[in-house]
Image (cartoon, rainbow, N blue to C red; front, side):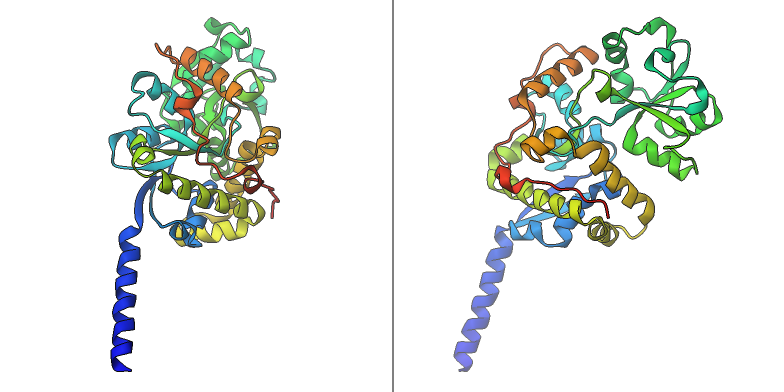
Length: 341
């Protein structure tokens, strides 16, 4: 009996050691600091979805959606949540190094111009003769010339003042600028945190509603990981997709996982941000048609063209260089139904 128990114990240790040895570690960078809109990643880790796929996903806070791309290109991170338009820019010049998006989450662009109701700006034509505040290098600011051209505005009549991102809302509130070139899911809640009512007192102009039908944030992976461990990529996507669908049905459960990761978050604000991400950026007629995580190639082709024009890129990447649906679960497993609760 003692020999049998010893043998079983040794076998158990060997099995555990073998399982641990086979677990793949993936360093994953968020697009920014801990936010409710990232709940699916925390939920997948908290509920063991990554572990079920044989993955040890290490989640780090980010420095911006565009920075996710450069972080992955540096080799220090294997995957992350970031902006597909930044992939397009880097794929144009360094196609062998740029990451590839494998799961589109925000299929509606967050690039927007926000103004006070009292500014006198009621239509986009009213931007003429006013001053817009933009952070240099951000997608909304960089794509403004394309926005102006597509909508027949007089660019020489629109003044743009460059400023740090954290000054945009304070200067808008004070009236130092007439409107701000922003990422709506960020600016909306910066206004909330500044005790403003972004619904009642502000007007929002989304680029997506005025000719710039761009895609935005999703899960991207390095080309190295794609080539060396496609099984891990498929597992990562499956786990995140499963979590995303669960959080869409129960945001309180999603927020519990956010708090488990970072107990310093402002839960009421971040829950609103999570719901905003579903309502404004994720749930759309396209998502309902093709399922969460996927894209339409013709729309991506047009979006790539807009980014190439806006950033004056010399080479136009193909949709396949930017996005791969190879690792997506079957369409029936990507049926996301969002219920605010």
